[in-house]
Amino acid sequence: MAKRDIERKASIVIITVILAIVIVTAILLVRQKYFGPKFKYKDFEVTKFTPEGTTVQLYSLRVPVRIYASTDIYHIYLRNDPRTLSNISVENTTREVLLDPKPEHVYLTFDPEMEERGKIAVALSQVSRVLGSAGGGIFKFPVTGAVTKFTEGLNGTITCGNSNEENVVILFQYANETAIWVDETAWRCIIVQGRNADELIRAADRATLTLLGI
Image (cartoon, rainbow, N blue to C red):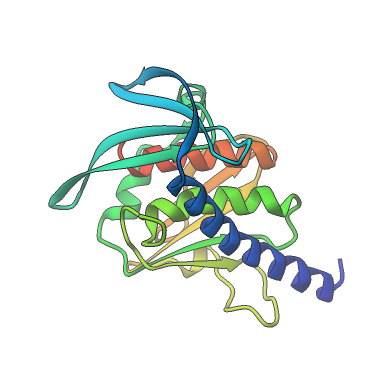
C-alpha cells in the first residue's frame, strides 16, 4: 500500500476516534428511550437500553470502582452483553500493569493499515472513555491515540517498545484469537486483540471490565 494511502487512512481513523468519543458521550447524556429487561452480572445490575434517536443497543452497569485510595460509583456502558464476554481470555496481570505504578500517560495505538476503521474507532473509544477524563472518564489518565507506523502529519509513532515505567501502551490488533494479554517483552504494554472488527469491540468491552476489576 502506498505511503500516501496509509497516511490518509491513519488520519481518518484518528479523526474518527475523536468523533466517536464525542458522539458516544453525547448519546449517553440524552434520555434513554427504551429499557430492556434487567439482569445481574457478578452482583451488578445491568440494563439494556437504546438511547433516544438512535438504534444503538447499549448495556449499562452501575458499579463501585476503587482506584487507588478512592471508591466511587460509576455508570459503565458496554456495546456487548457482559455475559457473552466471559469466553475471552484475559491475562491475570493486565490490571496490575495498568495501575502499578500510576502511569503518567496512556497511549492507545493501532496499525494504520487495519481495515474497518469505524469499528476500530469504537473499540478505542470504549477503552478511552474509561481511562481518560473526557465524557465522565473514570481513571482520568492523559490518553493519546497513536499509530504503530510512521505517518506524516500525525503525532508520533507508538509501539509496545515505547512503554516504560511512566507510560502504558495499549495495542489494538487483529489476531487469530480474541484475547487480552500482556507483552512480556515490553515494559508495560497491554494487547487487546480480536479475530475481526466486531471481535475487537468485544475485546475492548472485556478490557474495560478487566481494567475496572470486574
